[in-house]
Amino acid sequence: MDILDFKLSVIPIQKVEETFLSKAGISLSVLRTDLLHPQLSGNKWYKLKYNLLSASEKGIDTLLSFGGVWSNHIHALSAAGRLFGFKTIGVIRGELADPLNSCLKDARENGMRLYPVSRELYRQKNTPAFINSLHDQFGDFHLIPEGGANTLGIKGAAEILDDIDVSPYHTIAVACGTGTTLAGMLSSVPPQVGILGFQILKANGYLKREVEHMIQANKLNTPDNWHINDQYHFGGYARITRELHSFCKDFMKSSSIPVEPVNSGKMLFGLYDLVKRDFFPQNSSILAIHGGGLQGLRGFNY
Ligand SMILES: *Cc1c(COP(=O)(O)O)cnc(C)c1O
Image (cartoon, rainbow, N blue to C red; front, top):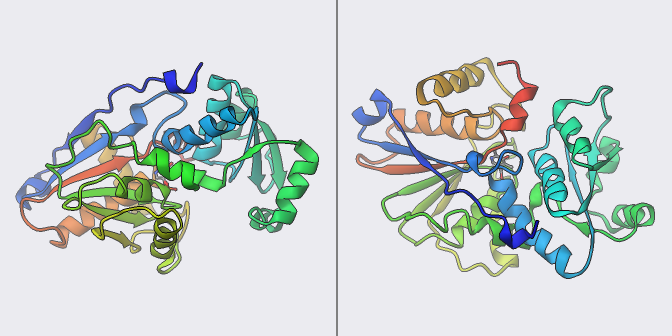
């Protein structure tokens, strides 16, 4: 399939009906990017799109990237490789279990070559020495950083809101791993719409600096109307508490929107908590981005 012919379905926006929200005068809607495509769901497709196009323009038939054993990005990359005819290599942090978990099993079935490396080596993933050694081993490839966090990823993420009238919303909320999705959306929203990112990993102020760096390095013309909340990481990346777990279960039941606890679950928990703390002014209208990643739910016992 041609990359530019890949037609996305129109992304539905679903309103969340909860008494405490209407009592607080808050309207909360969810942008269901999880419904884009069965394998290539959510923000990962957007971050991959221009990486695929760039590789294809350069005549490079292999894509290589990095991720953990439950990485939504690795999962999406393998699906993209299969759909658009690229070879894919996934450099995986840590050991491969035997049998593989369902994420990596899908990746392998999509034709991805899995290359596990130790955690120490994985930490060097951005160093020229390590990347050269990967080239020695695998030859020519288009490298996509972990999480699709590069200029082409930002460019794609800027398209998430393309078909949506964002003017009724005061705040757009998004879960942030690398911050690429936030940076992309920031370059495409009008200045009166604020963006509130929820940092899902534990590292004080880390994401704000990352996003500032991305804005500078890519000379993005962005409004200042964005903020990162780093209070809802629940102890770190992919850390989940009983409280978060039951929040996600309750949310799925009452809204019928499936969410995973690593990204969207933390964002929604944060949003609910902030509403309860009167963080948002009365009559605020919030659009929360559902980033997809539901394949990762298979790693939890729901
Ligand atoms: C990857 C992911 C994110 C984070 O995206 P970044 O661009 O890395 O900030 C958010 N939500 C879901 C479901 C994801 O899979």
